[in-house]
Length: 224
Image 1 (tube, rainbow, N blue to C red):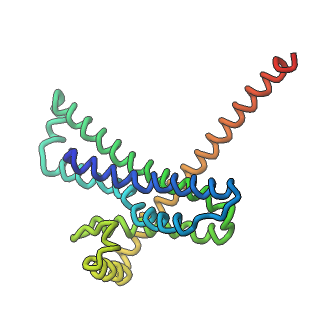
Image 2: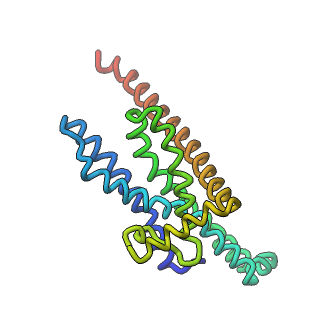
Image 3: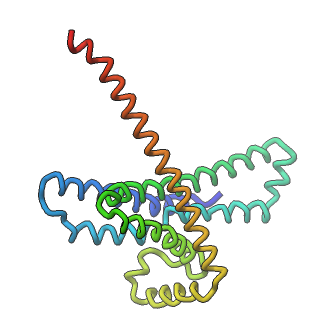
C-alpha cells in the first residue's frame, strides 16, 4: 500500500475543494438571503482556488497504477493463489485502493455539486454550456500532476514553474492521442457526476416525500 504520509497528504488536498465549494455556496446564499450584494471580491478568488485544487480529488483515481505496480513487482498475487495470509494481504490491499480511489471520486462529486446547484438556476443555458468544461480541465490537471515534473496546484502562482506548466500544457494540443485521453477522462468524470447528481435528486425527493408523509400523518393529531 501507499505510505501513510502520501495517503494523508493526497486526501487532504482532495478535501480542500470540497470545503471551498460548501463555503462559497453557503456564503453566496447567505449574502442573498440578507438582501445585501454578493461579495464577489471574496467569493471569486476562492472560486479560482477551488478550481485549481479540484483536480486533486479525481487525481486519486489514478492511484491504481501503484496497485498494478505492486502486483507486477511483488509475489503478492502468486501468494494470494496459495491462500492463507497471502490471500488476506491481497484482499486488504485491493480493498484499500478501492476505498482510496472511491474517497477521491466522492470528494470530486461533493466539490462540484454545491456550486453546480448554486449556479444552475442563475446561469441557465450559458451555465449548461460552460459547466462541462470543468471536467476536461480536471483531466488536464490530473495529467499535469502525473507527468514527469509533477506539477502542483500552487505552481500557478509560482513564476518559476508557471512557464514550464504553460509550455507543457501547450504540448498537449500537439499530441492528438494525449488530448483524446484527457478528453475521455473528462467525459468519464462528467458521466459519473451526472449519475451522482441524479442519485442526489432521487435522495432529496425521497426525503421530502417521507417528510411530507410524516407531516400528513401528524395533521389529524394536531387537529384533535
